[in-house]
Amino acid sequence: MMTNLARDRLIQSTQELLWQRGYTATSPAAIMKQAAVGQGSMYHHFSGKTELAAEAFRLSAEATYRKAKLLLDNGTPALDRVISYLLRQRDVLRGCPVGRMAEDAEVLTTPELFEILQSTFNRLRALISEVLSEGVSTAELPTSLAPAELADTVLAIVQGGYVLARAENDPAPFERAVNGAVALLRAAADGQARS
Amino acid sequence: MMTNLARDRLIQSTQELLWQRGYTATSPAAIMKQAAVGQGSMYHHFSGKTELAAEAFRLSAEATYRKAKLLLDNGTPALDRVISYLLRQRDVLRGCPVGRMAEDAEVLTTPELFEILQSTFNRLRALISEVLSEGVSTAELPTSLAPAELADTVLAIVQGGYVLARAENDPAPFERAVNGAVALLRAAADGQARS
DNA sequence: GTCTATATACAGATAGAC
DNA sequence: GTCTATCTGTATATAGAC
Image 1 (cartoon, rainbow over the protein chains, first blue to last red):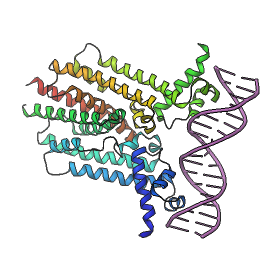
Image 2 (cartoon, chains in turn red, green, blue, yellow; image 1 turned 120 degrees about the horizontal axis):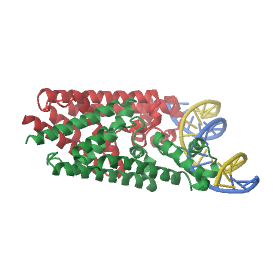
Image 3 (tube, each protein chain N blue to C red; image 1 turned 30 degrees about the horizontal axis):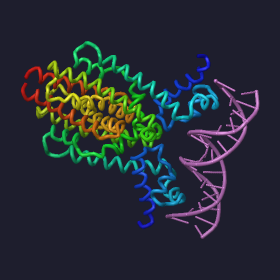
Image 4 (tube, each protein chain N blue to C red; image 1 turned 90 degrees about the vertical axis):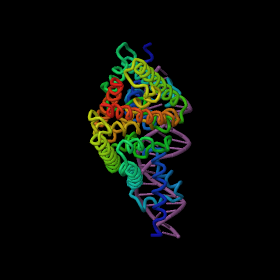
């Protein structure tokens, strides 16, 4: 309804600010300013900063999951899907809107926010693990690789790549990290092919 | 000298708080309380929060680098050294005192702090890259692996493992990520051995 | 539903006594 | 060198008018 325009703008501004600055460093005042909404509106629509942030984070996390699912859950060979996930174009210096929240101590102690963080990574892990299992059963990958372990390796390379890129203020370390991972996967698959 | 006891306690408290909470979330008041030192002492020894944090961060970063160097710069075979670096016992839920700072937007815009962050990762990267080059030249690893890329892959797995562990409040994802990485390195080395 | 005015707490730093 | 008192700004929230 028409009456929710302010609400929608508040949520969108919060999504952007959470991504850029994280939870603790995002103030209600900054959100209201960016949304061009007064203080009364915010406290009318939401009980406070936490509820607004939870709503915004939930939407961002869902969008992130859906994007991953598109790449990981289609009919192409399993190894190709994992590689396309690693090499996917990303806004490297902005980082991952989900992983970013894990470095904010306040998020970890705020149940509404922590739950979103945890469940999103659980769902991503399940998605990747499933693809890797397929890769092992089609003999694209050797049986020495445990899908449940390698799934976290893949997730960690992406999340860690963001950390390295920020520490250099340069996307290059991210690109090197994922390219190295792809080479490693291909070398392992190649060993398999010749066994 | 005796007169620097307060100074030393301030630095040590700052090191702990930076590790636990990051830079932005660490207040001078919290530092002084933990160090049991009054406000006047702090502003006598340091120009402010930034200078104190830089001093503390420099020491933590140096210690982190030295620990890595011990594992990566000794006489054992190159692949063993990389694997021992990955599998090294870590305080997973506390995270990496260096990588942690990369998620703090204020650190990235504070030159004294950013410089420490950047140079520390540069030195770690050089260390790992050197070991991997050795692994390729001794044919422990296939030439299809570019040391400069794989070095960032290794760094990213560790840094990303910390992110995943925090997002679950559980060290398990970190352990799975490094175990998966080791299996992948061995599979790649194995393919090499049989070529 | 939206606004401005106000309240309380804390961050970061300064002043000046001892 | 160290302390307490104080200052300015901002975070988060409430009150109450429109």
